Amino acid sequence: MDPLDRHICSHAYEQRQEHHGAVAPPLYQTSIFTFPDLESFSRAQLDERQHFIYSRGLNPTVKLLEDKLAALERGEACKAFASGMGAIAATLFSLLGQGDHVLRINQTYGPAVELLDQMARYGVSHDGISGHQDIGAHLRPDTRLIYIESPSSLRMELADLEVIARIARQHGILTLIDNTWATPLFQKPITHGIDLVVHSLSKYIGGHSDVVGGAVIGNAEVIDRLFANGHQLLGAALSPHSASLILRGLRTLPVRMAEHLRNGQAIAAFLDAHPQVAAVYHPSLAQGPAAEWAARQLKGHSGLLSFALHDSSYPRVERFINALQLMRIGVSWGGYESLALSPLRPDGSGQPLIRLAIGLEDIDEIIADLERGFTALDH
Ligand SMILES: *Cc1c(COP(=O)(O)O)cnc(C)c1O
Image (cartoon, rainbow, N blue to C red; front, side, top):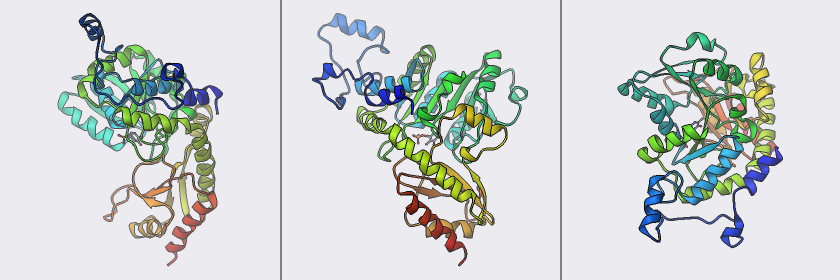
């Protein structure tokens, strides 16, 4: 784990001397900030991006989180949001307009695709390709944004970030990546030339399944525009209380990710060797070009993976998941607890995969739980 990242998570930007030496950053649970005279009020109003005026704009607790996230991603600036979707929506609405096209690389987070579908009403179009396809061949004259997930969050697909960034630059197209799977500790897309990074803070960064939040990191000019055209106007501001919970999660992110890495890799290897398993999707098992991209881009792997049974009919997937006792059934991931779900539906629609969020429990206990699932398949 990068020593600078550990320092950012624990200490950077806290300015404790200004807060009576408080070890935990103070929670500025306030909607407004007042001024001693009209002149300083008017001066602040000239630039809402730099002054604490109203907590839909800037709030000191939220700003501390933003400063840390920008530093972790090696970006210039960050804006935090009420959810990952809030971050994605503000970004898309502030960057895109009538006649713009978005090229998506790999499977995009479902609600983000639904939002792009909705944006057809404002003249925005989109389509998607795999990271293995020729990006240049799929660009259109009206392509304004390339929206990447690498690794993606169902099949953990990868893409070559440096190649995409280079092609996009040549065409004056912005690049955005959803980096939620890897966290900034395991992947720093800006250092590979990507312009914008979005996160759901509800996953590993919050880390305790008790808070929803999101963030966008990028260069100061784009984040400024996002502040003016997206953050302020769409109003999906992160509450100071949520920011305080996320800052608390950030403190332990390096140690939690080290454990998610160990447990995730161990479970991927266990499933890969299991006779009942047809395929395992986890970047630690990537092959061909994807293995090279993983080696170049990822400093570690998180604990979110999926796999397919040899016979992935709905009744078998159902029997497997219902037999689990340690792992609960639920959406989301990134907390301390292991979770399982399947996008497969009783009518056979949806992808025939089982997705596991491997938590921080004892590895033998997790394996014993999976054995319960496999045993249930034989009965
Ligand atoms: C959860 C998630 C989001 C959306 O974040 P919310 O905080 O739930 O709005 C976006 N992208 C990925 C990959 C996610 O897993």
